[in-house]
Length: 288
Ligand SMILES: NC(=O)c1ccc[n+]([C@@H]2O[C@H](COP(=O)([O-])OP(=O)(O)OC[C@H]3O[C@@H](n4cnc5c(N)ncnc54)[C@H](OP(=O)(O)O)[C@@H]3O)[C@@H](O)[C@H]2O)c1
Image (tube, rainbow, N blue to C red; front, side, top):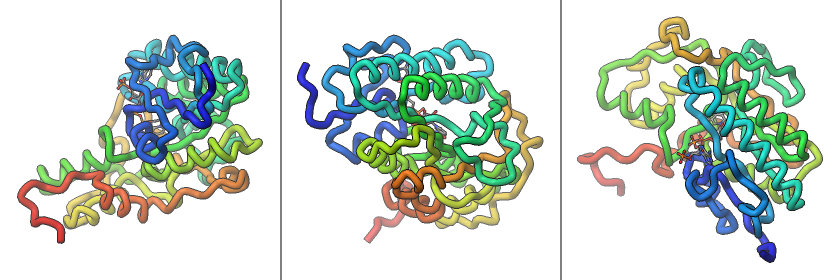
């Protein structure tokens, strides 16, 4: 098949990030997992593509602890197959990875070159995916704390809890950078056209906050009293997969590669609310 002028194939195109890529560019072909299963993808499945942005992932962090084989297939084998296919077609692959590849005990924003040390099955499988993509010459973009209009995420969970509980406790000892999937999608499209030398990059919303601080900001956006959110510790809410205490990723390499830094997490949150990340309440006064 003749290669289209510009056709960006997006495996995992029905997830949070994939939806926003499709909304931002008519060049994007968002593929569902039934259209394109990354665990068995070949070059023939990508015929006609000018680039691939891989948003397919096994993202259930806790479930991965007892389902590591499946997580490995999607997060490591799949990206490896995509990378080989893209290399054989001579087209760039941009693969999205995570802060969970780090141990999470840092004290300053992680640079792409900092030592990794995943503490969870999800992190281990994503790290192996990174390794395979980089080995085949693809791009890896690590991000963190992603939320968007489509799919489940922390912002929607907080909105649901706000309407159903008088108060709630949110962990105040994990620090990171909330990332609106719309902003990340715009950055990935820029990367696909700039194609810098640097292959391993970080892209998150600017600034940093704890989940507690993020939850209070969400309450502000909802017009609710932020004081209804109280701080607690990670130890108060044990989870099957350990969460990194420190997840802040440095955007210095991203900027040095000539790419536009993503907006600050707080202004992005306001924009996301304007874009409908939380559906307006039924019975609420109509907006003027
Ligand atoms: N969400 C976060 O907070 C976060 C943080 C850091 C990094 N990331 C990374 O960012 C990327 C995008 O995340 P997201 O939040 O958009 O994820 P998401 O909403 O969970 O979407 C992931 C998509 O992958 C698809 N998928 C699963 N198995 C597949 C397979 N075998 N073949 C093809 N597609 C498959 C899923 O489709 P089905 O539903 O049909 O299975 C789903 O649409 C991922 O690489 C993730 O690891 C996310």
